[in-house]
Length: 497
Ligand code: NAD
Image 1 (cartoon, rainbow, N blue to C red):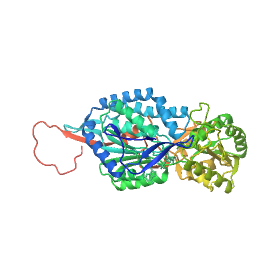
Image 2: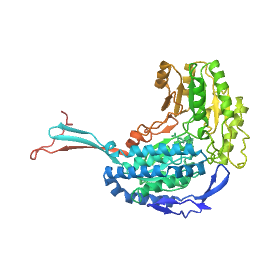
Image 3: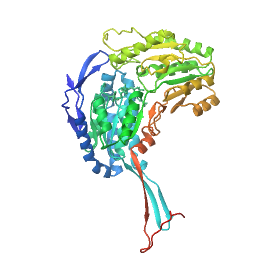
Image 4: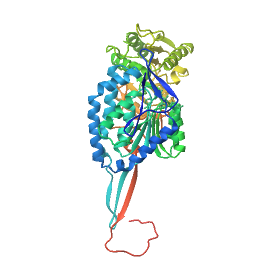
């Protein structure tokens, strides 16, 4: 059985922990590897290595840091297929979906290649007689990232390329459910020429997370995961004086207006609702057709497509959707479907009991579609994170908007319409951080920034893009005077022009 190592000081290091977690192949249910769960002392030792690497790295010219990112991008391209296979083996998503994840992560590396330009400050000459002022963005120090299972390659790449290009050193704590892809990708950055100790991967669970939050040498923490843990990481990290951005869960609604093209809507909902088995923080989990006629047409167009979903292991190139990540998560999703039925929603397509010949031990759940979902129901209020789409019928556009704005989460949302007026008003008034107009999953490109609103984020900065540069740096403003000769006499009033 393979044991997965940490990556510390530029090389693989076997944890000496007595605790470990099994890593499974979700398509078969068989154990694929053992992950030692590192101790708090091992985390602290890795932080000491990252701290020792900091002064030289922070002083390395940004252009030299960027050149390593260029090489890293090249290596990611060359190894995209192998990374995608490593993702699918432990996460279960289809190969094409995993390749897409590698590509979206790689785009953040492309953004980080522009770091000399992104770190340029501002300069004002003659703010007073012979006085000049300039501002500069400096790295924070050792920073850490804690990541979820659903994008084991992309979410770490949302964080450390930007943090490292800014001159910080980094500790990554990947998800313990699918940890291999993160190690493979980090080792490519070593191969690209990153000095040892600048990026370190420490596997583990709550013990390592708590050690990150407690370690005084860690100046900032980026977290992506579920809302209860995001809220805990934010509260604990900030109480310990750290800068924290913690991105949480979601319940993304897609409004379907009566004038929308129903075939396009159904296609969009198939990809956005069932792609990656619904295990995406930007998955659409609620469709909100406006008016009964729109709702009836939507169900009629959508239901046959949900029944026809091709489900299989990642090795099946025809599969559109794979298994869920673990047995425990599969049971949670099945529990939500039972609850939806018990609370009175109409189950149009039932994904329970789905079995695949040859993969009977896999964590598969079939595509599931609920109609007549009510806003009080558990399946509407909570994030299911599975291939379960709820249809909640809204009598009017205003009521659809109110529904979204009243929800606890505000990650992404979308509207499908041909009406520019409705689309424009929706983009302006909806309370969510990322909005799609005839785009079901509006994940911003790498040179914009990603972040929700409400309980989908804790902290002031969205992740990657310009917001990432702001998060991983602090501003310093220098005011300098080079007078002719030495002047005498103190000045007691606040200087003004
Ligand atoms: P999770 O919260 O269970 O785990 C995330 C990280 O927190 C992991 O590294 C895990 O080891 C750690 N963790 C788990 N329990 C902990 C505890 N009690 N104390 C300290 N640390 C703990 O999330 P997950 O199941 O891996 O990922 C799915 C969730 O992530 C979903 O809610 C999804 O919406 C969310 N997500 C959000 C975004 C976003 O950008 N907003 C992106 C991807 C995923």
